Image 1: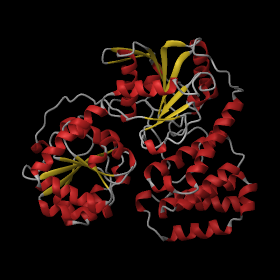
Image 2: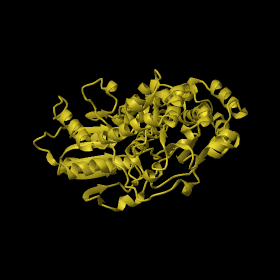
Image 3: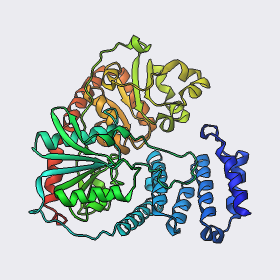
Image 4: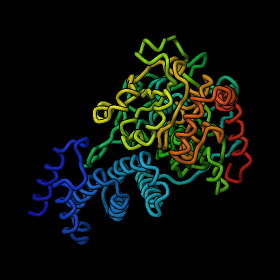
Amino acid sequence: MLYEKLASFANKINEIPPKELKLNNPIYNETKKIIELITDETVEQNDSIKILYIYFLSFMYYNDKKISHAVSMLKIILKSSISHYTKLFYYWQLQRFKFLNPEFTTDNEFPVLLENLYSDIYCSFKNELNLTENHISANERNINLIFIITSQFLSLEHAPTKTTLDRAYTLCKYWGKQVLIINTADLVTFVNCVPFYNLFGANIFNKYSEISELNYNECSFQFYQPKEPMPNKDSMMEIINCVLRHKPYFILNIGGNNITSDLCSLFVPTVSQATVFSDIPQTLGTFAITANPKLQTKDNILSTTFTFSYKPQTHTYTRSDFSLPDNKFIIIMVGGRLTEEVSYEFLRELSEIFKYNIHITFVGNFSTYESIIEKDSVLRENTSFIGFQDDILAIVELVDLYVNPPRTGGGSSIAEALSKGKPAVTLDFGDCSFSAGKDFCVKNIDEMKNSIIKYATDSEFYNIMSKKALERNEILTNTKKALENIVSSAENSKYWW
């Protein structure tokens, strides 16, 4: 009886689109009361109610953004006996909370609980597949063969895909290695999914399951993507058996959070590099790579500059092609998640800059743009949104300055701006701060405003920083040196075998 009532209420919640959420709305208050009435004993004893309880907490989080709801979810999941496939589904939804809200990283409980959940899932898969550690020694491994494992592989517009191809190209072109790229295609898995408010999914290109070879520039790589939705124990064992059969010298994992790659570290060394490179990748593999030296707190955490290659520019545009003002200093903000990352409050904080003949252009996915400018004439007159652009380097040429909104990601788009000699302004946290380097970092929004105004009004300063942008780009595109540093550090580590 209780379950039916809760399920009926959950259906009522599910009818509310996320964009219509308002704090202290009637459904929010009613959900809050229901959560308070359900006892811990009821949640622990009934898995069906447990799943609905977590759903209510996810709805509460999307209303008030309180980290305590996510912490409560993790504690319930960790104590539960639900399938590790479902736990992995939950893991990815909660990992997204952390990505979109930098406050999760500094919370006292959330990062530890999320790490514990990942470890729990890893151990369950290890037991299910009946795997035990059995290191293959260096002299048995093929020094000329490297595997690269990633959780998502899409197109050249997708930064993690570019990262994978850039590393593969460097290993092939400059090191003379054979490379097998494996896309486990399990980023934000829906296998054994359960109700979760504002459910997040990830793109999968199923066409890649039909190919066995990829060409990139003048290099050719073997390629594998499972046909079955992942995680799938048969596909996981197929990848592991491939490792056991071919004995690669090491495995480079792009992105972290990859159970299959971590299971492979039972046999050959794995080196995991997060695509959120200002952080440490979530991994139980051999080595973890970060761009943040302050996080190098263990011997198996390696630090290096995160490097990039760019999709070649194929167009030349003018400002008039996009109805951009010719007589203004144009700022660009770029991202696939601007809807979540650029708030009305942030833009209002920056509004003083418009007194200095400055215009902001947004590029990417920004579904709330129209609703934001609709209520603010200043923003309506001094900003524009040109949608997703296939040739971002051609767009960057049209603007004067890159500005990074408060967020964790954005590291690749700021690098693209620097490559065109465009200075940047970013807060001193997240991926952008490590791409840009200290010369382009500020401590708070007030400093950001002052820096933007200085760029717009001081041409001598602008020219100096433009040269520094090009110098920084030289470092950011030297993948050969970055990989040499990492592999050398790994080979000389006590954790290498």
